[in-house]
Image 1 (cartoon, rainbow, N blue to C red):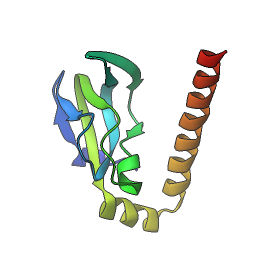
Image 2 (image 1 turned 180 degrees about the vertical axis):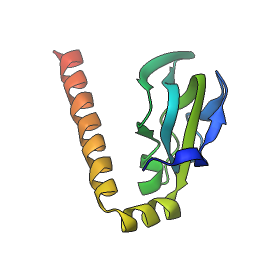
Image 3 (image 1 turned 30 degrees about the vertical axis):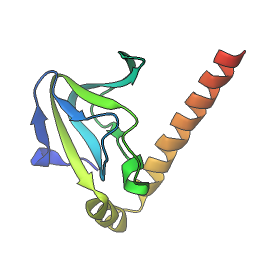
Length: 121
């Protein structure tokens, strides 16, 4: 899913997607760093950092729900956007893409489950 020079350049601090907005696309970080933020009770909490090769926003491909977090460029970053149709074409051409996304989503679920268990413990 490396998009080469097709992505868009985002300057430092620019928002790629915002928590609460409707989404219909997922993203691939081509180069640079991004931060994932979630607003809770009026303050922004950094959830994680994304770097080259990471994907985000993939839930919007599968369900029409508001974005769960805000993602911003941390320094200059290049990001490729894939809407549902582009994603389906990519999976049709290379089915292993779907497997890699499911693998990543499974890892995130496991990490969140461990974090919930730790917080409850």
